[in-house]
Amino acid sequence: MQNRTIGGRAVSAIGLGGMPMSIEGRPDRDRSIATIHAALDAGVTLIDTADAYHQHADEVGHNEELIAAALRSYGGDTSGVLVATKGGHLRPGDGSWTKDGRPEYLKVAVKASAKRLGVEAIGLYQFHRPDPNVPYGDSVGAIRDLLDEGVIEMAGISNANPDQIREANDILGGRLVSVQNQFSPRFRSSLPELELCAQLGIAFLPWSPLGGIALARSGELGAEYAAFLEVAEAHGVSPFRVTLAWELALAPVVVPIPGASRPESVQDSAQAADLTLTDDEVARLSAAGA
Ligand SMILES: NC(=O)c1ccc[n+]([C@@H]2O[C@H](COP(=O)([O-])OP(=O)(O)OC[C@H]3O[C@@H](n4cnc5c(N)ncnc54)[C@H](OP(=O)(O)O)[C@@H]3O)[C@@H](O)[C@H]2O)c1
View: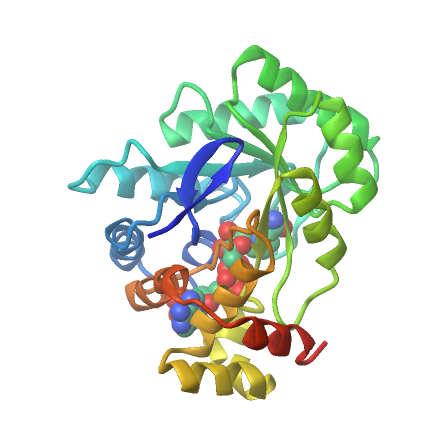
């Protein structure tokens, strides 16, 4: 699998998003472990998670624990795997997602995440989502403190607009390494953030890169965007693989993190890193459905 970089660290060009294995509709534990192992077998070295990827109120960090367990039980070398987690979102257990961006909360949450992941320092910690009740600079200031104290090795943000990306990078003293925003053929509103990251040399991690769990599982991606289906047919591959290859082609800083709850999904997505689209195909896909 070809590599890209996050903060100078090499990671696989296609990552794995852990969320579908821990929220509503999740598979049983054995299938989740098999899915993570399939990703590792395919050469995936970036796994995205969050403390908020759980369903019930009493299982905060369900996904972090699952990933840590899968890494422990994997037969091969996992020393090159970067586990990127996030803090600042909560799930009270009623299906909702709430926010807490207070520095004192984030500083406690990060330690709980490190414990669940079984690491001294978290490889990449991302502030999950701006909290309208807390000045953005205060939340990012907490992330800077964690970086300075060595509690985390690299810092990222998520769901940020261009002004917030610049502000966060200033507060972090130029040490912002990643931005994770929603981006897919269907949701392109983060294109300005992607382009800013490309200018600044900051990794851009599209979340829900296949349009989200429900859409992707329905298999409708190709039906919605005929161009993706047609390019897929021309290459003899799935429209999901074409979608990820198109995202990779948009800028060298892009590292998609498709979610999965089945080994087959991971195995297919990972091969997007080896699919080269022509300039004409990329232009056609960029124009399609926009
Ligand atoms: N920062 C944020 O606020 C935020 C928000 C949402 C998500 N995320 C992150 O982004 C990751 C990805 O987003 P997502 O999981 O919401 O949506 P997604 O990646 O757009 O779609 C995930 C679904 O796509 C299916 N899939 C993946 N690869 C496939 C393939 N090659 N062929 C067929 N189906 C395939 C999987 O189905 P199966 O389940 O059947 O395998 C999976 O459930 C999440 O897991 C999470 O880590 C972050």
